Amino acid sequence: MAVSLTLSPFLMGASQFLIMGVWLFTGDPVKVKLQRFFHNKIALVLVSLYLLHLIGLIYTSDFAYAFKDLRVKLPLLILPLVLSSERPLDKKHFDLLMLIYVASVFVATCISFGYYLKNDYGDIREISHFISHIRFCLNIVMAMGIILYYIYERPITKGKVVPAFSTKTALNGYVMWFLLFWFVSQIYLFESLSGYLAFAGLVVASLLYLYFTKVRSTTWKVVGLAVVIAVPVVAGLLVHRTFNRLLEVEPVDLATLEKKTALGNDYWHDTICFPVEDGQYIGLYFCRPEMCEAWNQRSALDYDGLTRNGENLEATLARYLTSKGLRKDASGVAALTDEDLRNVENGVANYNNLTHPGVRARLSETAFEYNQYRRYNNPNGGSLSQRIEYTRASWHLIQQHPVFGVGTGDLPDAYQRAYDELQSPLEPQYRHRAHNQYLSITVGFGIVGLLLFLVTLLLPYCSAKRYRTYLYTVFLVIALLSMLPEDTIETQAGVMWFAFFNTLLIFALGNREEEPQKQ
Image (cartoon, rainbow, N blue to C red; front, top):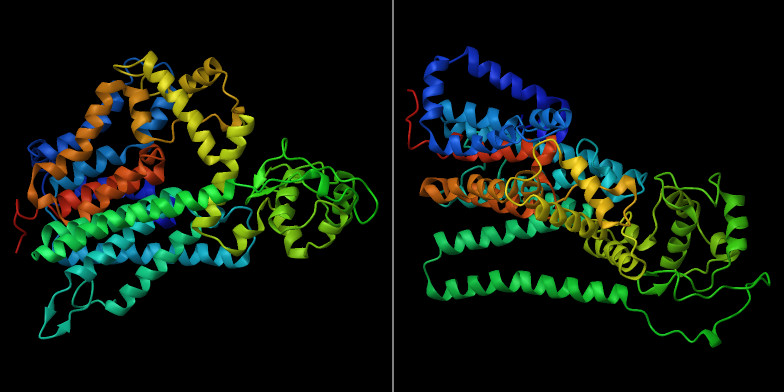
């Protein structure tokens, strides 16, 4: 199961049934295990989230979708049942499990980086080969948290640092630091706002945990608190400044612009209909006939058609030329290299996003999407703008069904109805659910369901000090933040990641004080 989280969707499902089979046919009798489960209040609280989905069947109409949803969310039932009723893992086996997980994440990032080096993609996020880039980023950040845990927890004996995950493993401190920086670079590479948010949560949670548990000096407490406050503030200011720069354009005097191309054709200069790309008007120095003829001479893809990832080719080409500082005419198309041509054919709309991947590239794309939505009421294809429409539809449904929601299986139909009622400009292929776990739960099960969901998330951490470990603190912060821009537990990869660590860190690690190990 640890390996499957990043490397095999098939094993995600198969591992659940394997674990269930081991639980049924090995170890203590099932009756004894069930007694342990029913006497474990935290386990019952966690399983209640799955029971909420079962109760939602009472007032649902689309049972086909409901049963599919219940199948995807089986980890919310199976893992609390199994891990709360078995004896806790000893430190040796827990460390081995964490080692296997970190190693699998490393292998997955190596594979994705291989796709990146091939440069055969239209969107950087496509290099995540096995699961969505968003779920992949959650795993990468969690792996970083595990590494920090072992760096932080390694005992020092007679001036010598004990090897990382256990005294027998070959993974020492130097390798851990390499893995840590490697994972940071991969998060940067993916240009995922959810990944950046999770990474920021990891940093802040780590600093706060050290601040409250280990710092004794008043001076260092003040310094630590200042750093914790300064990091998000400075990051927010830098993001805001960069975002504004990408949207701002200098005034243009149309009278001073050249009127003819090098071939003697007329330019079309526009600052209204076309949007802005990296602070430049796409509509300046635009000659469509020359672009069309020059492109069709060099590419097998029709100028009036689509890119390989389904985007409008003309718009993509115009944006790409603008990002390179080239005019939208025959000379501009001729100046493109063969690699540039492949990029446009694959749907890459901004050259700078390839040469400088990372935070700025993601902000550039977000700024373009936001500008499209703000000026032309066009949210289609934009991550941020589409989420605004998803939120509008979610609030519309919550107002209609505030107490108990629409039921387990009716969410897809309810959202389609909401988009129609709101006359949303979203095209049918972009009409999805909330992309916010808290809103999804509220739409499905109302305010009652949201309250129960929050209890299942927060009660274990608040109920006993033994659960407030560094690893569980980091996991909980990452999970809570991931649910703001995404429906984390609505997909197989997301719910498996959540259930795996949520139950493992509570029952396999946190319960050691409750039940001694067999000798």
